[in-house]
Length: 147
Image 1 (cartoon, rainbow, N blue to C red):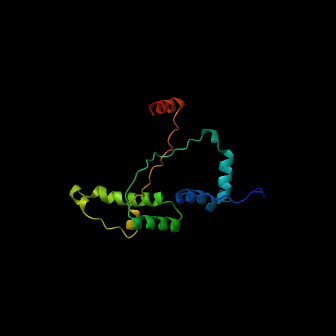
Image 2: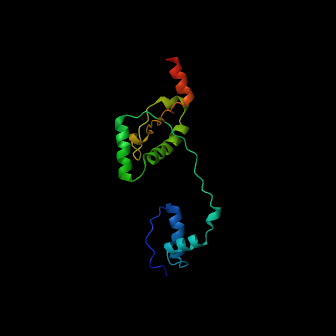
Image 3: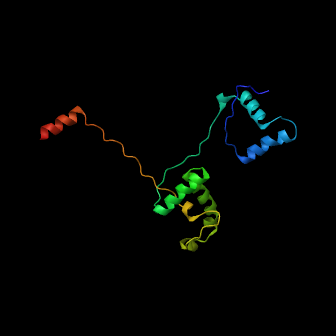
C-alpha cells in the first residue's frame, strides 16, 4: 500500500509510454500505473543516468507583428512554447518541401488546415549585449596622459 504521506506528483509522459505502462495493469500483472512507476524509481540506479539533449542553435527570423502575436496567442492556448509550435510546423512542412522540385520552391505555399501560417516561421530574438568591461588602471592612466 502506498505511503499515506505521499502526495500527487505531476509527470508528463509520452502517450506511447503511458500505453505500455497501462498494458500490465489491464492484464492484471500490476495494480496501477503509479505502482509501476514507484517500483521502477525504487529499483533504478540513477548514478548511471545519461541524459541526452539534442544540440540546438538559436537563429533569428524576421516575422511580422501579426505572426508573432498569433504564435504567442496559440502557445498560451495550447499550453506550450512558441518553439514547440515552430518545430511542429516546420516538421510538418519539410516533407512537402523535400518532395518538391527545386523550381517549385519559389511558389507560395498555402498552409495546411492543421498548421496555420502564423506557426510556419520562427520568432526572432536579439542577442543580449554584455556590459562593457571597465578600463584597467593602465588604460585609465594612458588616456589621462593623452589629454
